[in-house]
Amino acid sequence: MKEADVLRLEHSDMSVMRWTCNVTLKYRKSSPELRERLDLDSIRNCIRRDRVRWFGHVERCSDDSVMKKYRDIVDKGQQREGTSRKIWYQLMDSDLRSLKIDRDLA
Image (cartoon, rainbow, N blue to C red; front, side):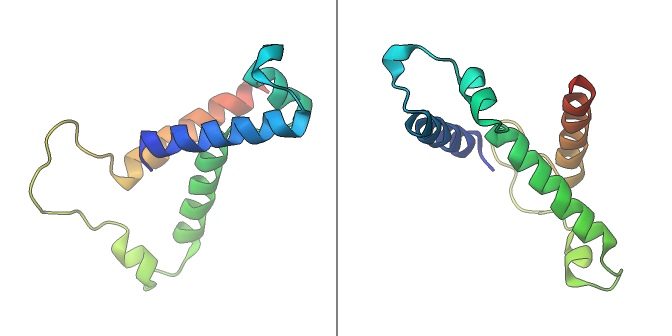
């Protein structure tokens, strides 16, 4: 998921939270304060948690399943400019580390 997509989701999430709490921007309530009031997790953490859950699902599949076969495919196409994309295992490693840190803080 691209960073711009995550930012759009966060913006939409915050507007729905403000509407739910009946709080406008003029009240100057922070996002963490509203999340705590509604007992909600951030969109980024929800995305991470769901990716890790999908990763667990794929890992538990049998070795001859289509998902497991295509898990390790690397695109041999033309290299794009800028930073290269993370591969699946790099993304899972960063997600697992961040979720572990979040659980340690809780």
